Length: 325
Image (cartoon, rainbow, N blue to C red; front, side):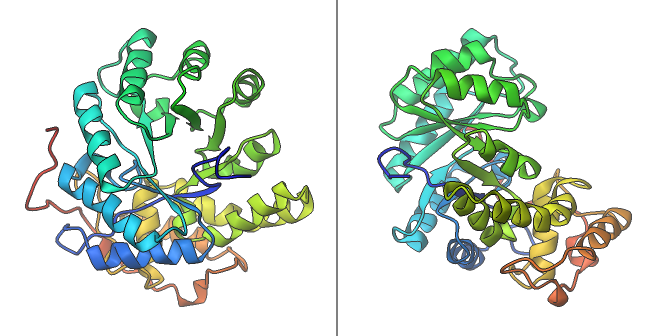
């Protein structure tokens, strides 16, 4: 798929933001982790998304994550800024600054908490898309925002020249097919368990949490689907299934991903910022039980997994609070 037809990549990682034990951004850890996932096959990185704990990052941290991502990627992967805001004016300013910081694209989440009508949702998307020259991915995740992007709203939003794609975490496969049939939008799977099914009906790629740990098998799946090799894609999907379950089932994906990455020695701390907290003992045990049945996965050696429940316990209060301005 050419860069002109797809400015985002296909294997996109919804990047965790590594923190120190006291909850500050571990900038050296960020650089290492971005390099790790690109080396493993990612061609797009979504910084400051849900998995990156955008709701507890300050605006300066969000912009620096774009700058650091752009520097580390050095042309090897696209850097997409996620998150946004449920205040349209703030989202516009944040995305303008992200563009100046070097972002290759922006991902706009449905306004959360306010619960606007679909007219409000569409206006939010259009005004942000008007304010940037960057290609836009819409992010449909009603489980977190409280409202979906309805089918008719997607069709209307797709008419905007800057709105090029949608990330789907809604799981309605019939709607995916309808949108693909009636728009030119690129579709990205936002549900780790459904990556292969989404690709099989025409999705472009994925924006995944588990890809923080195992980007390589997602590269295998995407490349195999591109080549029409369903058997290879299905085998990689099968290998990933218990790891996806470990990451996405028992605690928020951010929490589990950091717990596993730290246990593998790939980030310096599993710390998350409050109100997120590390896994309780029973939750950690469930994650570890799932990992125990994971077989061979390219790029992941679970024989080196050394979980640290004490390091993951609780959550951090950073020195500077996240702001809305």
